[in-house]
Image (tube, rainbow, N blue to C red; front, side, top):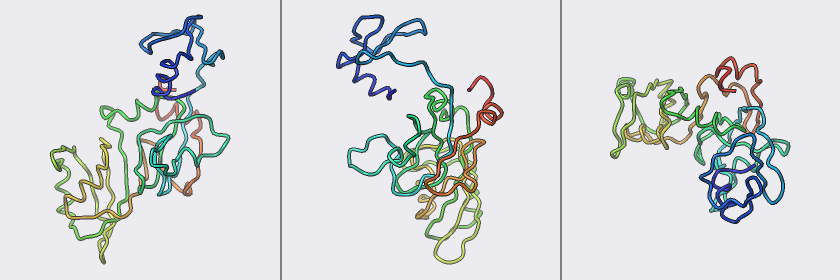
Length: 226
């Protein structure tokens, strides 16, 4: 019904009861046998795990609330969508595949660097670069004290002022693609995520959202994940 941070606020405001007693701390274990009330209303049981593909356009931030008042991804979802969270983020000017789920545990599992899920991007960057220079990223690179692991980058075409580059990463650190290509003298002016793990952007149009069938989830992630 809310994020963990919002749940902490509800508890701090004395609006949550556990088995008839007002909670004063979130550091409490709750089982299916316990009764949890928020503002006097029972919290429902967890819904089955669901996952959606969303084609994020540029100009939206991936957050539920933005202090600067910018438009958010969640404000632009269909009104019949349940409450969802994103699997990772795409920054304001990035576009492409953003996975959305109603299951926080699934989101954390897909985000974990230890799972090494491959993320693929197409980057348009101002400047010139050779394939030989891009191949140096296979050994990883340190930029401004931040170490990035192996990156597979392929030059699609490099005629004119801009180059199109396909980039595959597994860590997904903040602004990783932009920072790494900047270290090679390239200024990314368009960044599109085309896949996240086994899930593809495909022909999904910008702004569109499509649920991934439960059968596909089980096939791709395993029965234990869903």
